[in-house]
Amino acid sequence: MTVTSPDIIFNTIDNGIIILDDNLNIVFWNRWCELKTKIDSKDILGNNICKQFNNINEKTLKRKIKLTLSLNSPSYYSVNPHNYFIDININSITDKVYTLMQQSVTLVPYDLEKKQICLYIYDNTQLSTTNYRLSLALQELELYKNQLEDKVELELRLNKEKDRLIAEQSKLAAMGEMIGAIAHQWRQPLNALSGHIQFLEDDFDDNIVDEKYIKKFINKNMEFVKFMSNTIDDFRNFFRIDKKRVKFTVREKILNTVKIIQNDLDNHNVNITINDKDFISYGFANEFQQVILNIINNSKDALIQNNIENKKIDIVIKDTGIIEICDNAGGIASDIINRVFEPYFTTKEEGKGTGIGLYMSKKIIEDNMEGEIGVINYKDGVIFKIKLNKIK
Image (cartoon, rainbow, N blue to C red; front, side, top):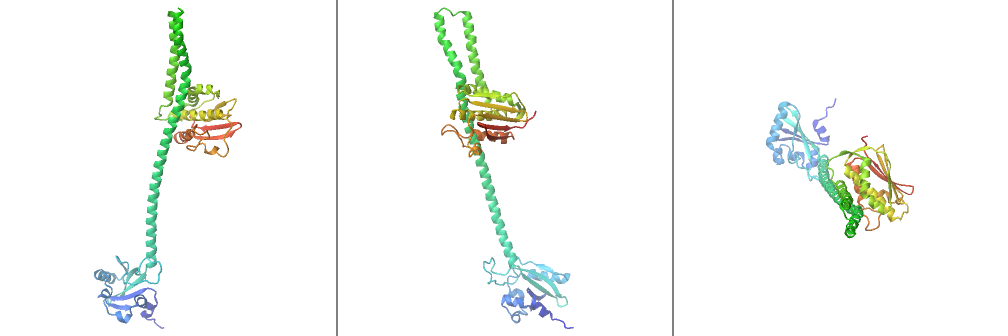
């Protein structure tokens, strides 16, 4: 039986193998080491490895060798901080990260009597390069994530600010419409008061002013004043900011909203009907009224703009929690009907619409009241459909 020499085996292994004694003198230097370092074994054998390679920590290596021999067990030698044990240039790799081969080293007992250990040197350059590039990629990814989070946070702040500004614009636009509605509501009683005051002097000259006349005069004119005062109260309640969710009767809130603009509807010959069904919902009652007002005003404006002769708005309340507001204003073009809830989008003539009423209506119903709102063309007009959370 032929016994293969350890030298032959060690020289065929594709790793560095160095045998050292406990004084750190090189006893064996394999072919791999020769090829990688360009140092022939005959020129290095017997030399102290620390003097040959000055980056090696002599105290640490001696301590590791002593531990390995005493335990008669392999141990790992840390090559930090250099990440190599012996300096080996790597010239053939393109786009390289390291100029010196990155290594890991294992110490194995070789001859306990002679106090010799075997150093196995592994080429870790590819793994270290991969880890380094992975680390860079992770750093870039973290940087991108942080930048993305900053962008998202900024976008959220901008969106909140945009929604706040749109809400303010919506309020101002609604208040402008309401002031116009107040003017309509007050015009008739103001005219009546003016007429009564003008006729008072003539009646006095005609000697028909007596106690009975004065009482009747006061009572009649106080009715006008009370009507005007109630109008102010209605508008003040309408614009009160809801601070908490409440239960409210849907039909009552719709009737209150219609009452506020009834004069305006009458002046434009718009006939509005509301069916008798009802249900109770839970949410911000005044905001719900704002939505109803926005939709009715949009329908009214479309009826006027399109010169509809028999102007109609029908409000249908269903006990399933659905409100439908229908008109006969001619409908909305199919290529833009899906955009009516976008901010600043309007189908009205230039200068006659802000494009924020329906946007705010959608925000109120879907975000604040967790409901749904949509619009479809139907027959000779449109149907705005609102679905609310029904309590009973």
